[in-house]
Structures are given as C-alpha cells and as structure tokens.
Image 1 (cartoon, one colour):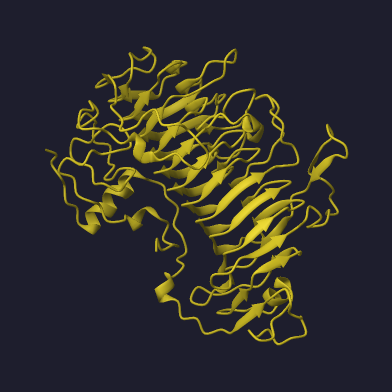
Image 2 (cartoon, one colour):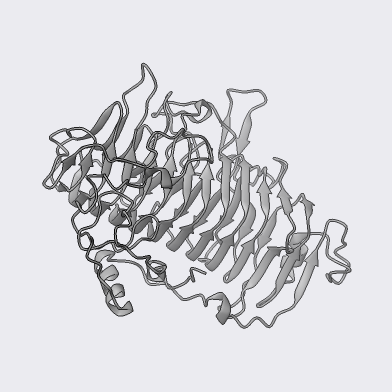
Length: 511
C-alpha cells in the first residue's frame, strides 16, 4: 500500500517552483469566465459581399475584410465554405476584450492557399526542391498571419500554403496573448505553424500534418533540408497542449531556438520525419504526458529508419544563442522510434539542469541493414546536473542504452528489461520485465494508446522509484512517497489528482 501525501495549494505550488525553476513570468490573460466582452459580432460567408453590413443575414465575403474591421471585444464568425485568401490579423484586442475569429458553431470553414497564396514575397524563395519538374519551392510567409495582441483564432481548416500555414509574428514588435485552438493545419510547402518573437501564446487542440511538402523523399541524417512543423523562435511563455502533430517532413515540434518558458503537455506526436519532440537551445522547458511513437512508415523515414522520439540538442550553427537549461521531461511514453530518447553531441556548449524522470521508453526500432536502434543514448558533451531516473527502458531487440561517458550525468532507479550497459547503469536500478498491460500492441497511425503501457500488478516497477518531486503520472494519478518507475503509477491505494493548473504559465486557464 502506498503512502499518499496531501499538499495544500500553497505547498504544492512551492514544491513545483522548487522543481521547475527559472520559469518565466507571464502577463496574465484572464480565463474565459473573467472576460467582459463588450464588442460587436460580424459574420463571413462564401455567398456574402464586402459591401454588406456583416450581419448573419447579410455577411461579408472575405475573412480579411471582417478582421480589418474588428476591434477589442469583437467576434468574427466564419460560416462553412472554402475561402481562397491569405489572412493577416493586424488589429489587437485587450486583456478583458480579445478579438475572436472563429468558426460559426458546428460549421467548418476552410482557408485554402491552393499552393498559390501567400504570393512569393520580394525576398524570394526560402528554398526549392529541384529534383522534380517543375520544382516545388516555398517561402516563409504565413497563409494566416497573426500580428495583433489578445487574439483568439479557432475552428478553421488551413491548407495548401505556398509558405507556412500559420505565423504569429509582427515586424518591430512582439505579439502577446494569442490563442490558437482547434484548427486543422495541413499540406503546406513550408512549416505548419511558427511563433517568432512573441509572448504568452497558447496552442491547444490543433492537428498539424503534412508540413514541409515541398520535399518529401527519405533523406540522410546529414541532409538538413527541411522546416520544423511547429516551432517557437526567441519567444517566451508558450504552451502546446493537446495537439496532434504527425506525418510532417521535418521535426514535429521544436521548443527553440532561443525560447524561454515552453510547456509541451498532453500532445500526441508520431511519424515526423526529422524527429518528434526537439528541445533545442531553450530554457525552462516542461515536456510532460506526451504520447510519442513511430510506425515505421517508409514515407517518413530518415536515412531509411524511423525518426527519433524526444531529443535534446544545441545545434552548433546557432552558436552564441542560449543553450539548453532548466528542462523537465516527465511522464511521457515513447515507442517504436529509432532513438526513443537522445541527447545529441553538444560540442563545447553547456547543457545544464535537465531531469528526465518517470518516462517509459519501449522498443526503439531500426530496419535490417541499417544502423541499430537504441532505447536511450547520450552523446559526448559538456553537461552539468543531468539526471536520468525512474524511467522504464524496455527492448525486445537492439540496444537498451549507451552513454559516451561524459561527466555531469547521473543515472538511478531505472528499470531495464535486460542488464544495462555500464555507461548508463546506476544505483537503485532494476532488471526485469516491466509487465505492461499490452506491450506488444501494433503501432498503427492514430491507434496507439498510452494505456497499453500501464503496469500490471506484478510489475517490478511498482514502488521502486526515488521521489523526484513529481506528484502525478501520465494519467493524472497521484504518486506516493515511493513512486513507481515509469510513466504510470499503479492504482494501489492511489487517488486521482486534481488538474494542476500551476504548471501552466499565468497567462492561461486550463479550461
């Protein structure tokens, strides 16, 4: 029977602050029930006219016309249909009265660039795939471009951009307090979604796929010609929550470069060509409760193999920018990728204050004749205070784990399905079958469940962990004084934990 600790809200908050230090402070966006919207409502429909008053009976014809006339507290409802236009939101709302641009209830508006919009900018192409005729080229402008503050954009399908799908950025400024929710963003020549020099951005409940489709072939790991599907560049207080990011020709989600206070929680990522979650040159990063897997789809091979799962790196071609510091990777499930978890070669720049705890890494996979897969790997680097603890590493074939032997990394209380290499073995380790509920389920796109990798009552992982300041598991079950190893806490006397809003930047409500 586990011993359960009850924390008051204040003590709980104090503990999380101690564990997740250096989190940036956000300017608050009021929760939805605190907003006092006083603006007007306008409507857009394919059969409308921009000379109309924008009412439900006489709607506007274009989204752009409607947003150009929107101010604080205004709501723009867009009816079902296809809108062949690029949309630039220049106006701003306020903290109490944001501008809301949304699908009309129970309808499905589509913004379609038809691979012609946005038009090629004056600076020219960002790149071209000249291996096909005619070549496919891309640029960096967004089909939907959010430049204003206090804007909510939700409920759209956004497809076939000649550049990026969506961009949050403004010249000579920093957009702040923007919410992007429940959109389907797909089939773009460049990235699906980019946040650039912005603050307090919530990206929730979206689906992103088929970004970077200007070049779709399998490429070697040394051929770095792809855009990141979803990324934040030199931004602060970014929350990615409950998104599905899959089948992109590039990294699935990157926390950097140069970003601070990035939370990646409750997302599903699979079959993203370059890798799935990339922690790159960023500070105060929290990666929790994500489901990451690779199905070995040959259309998304990298060098003939499935892509990596979760990776940390300070790319050397961005020397001089901030390096990885203050990262917590917890309660994630990663399965079927070539490297389920990796810290890649860092050169001489420092990677510091990283804790990787209570994750489950299962069956890293590679193809016959290719470089062998490995469950977890740590390259040569300059490390300080890196902790790898309370994780399950299970392989039915290939290597469990390996480290180049750099100092600054400690390993303890991990469960290995076979004896670990001495370079990654540590105090409190166990060797044995984790006894998953269904550890051999077929990895098929959209059909993998984290529940397959819950622990059975016979698992040696139960009560075998070391307390690492983590109060809940992947499924929001409360952990006890002697936590289970891995992402699941077996329900032996454990109660449910209320949703821990304190993990989100102050800018956002979890509701």
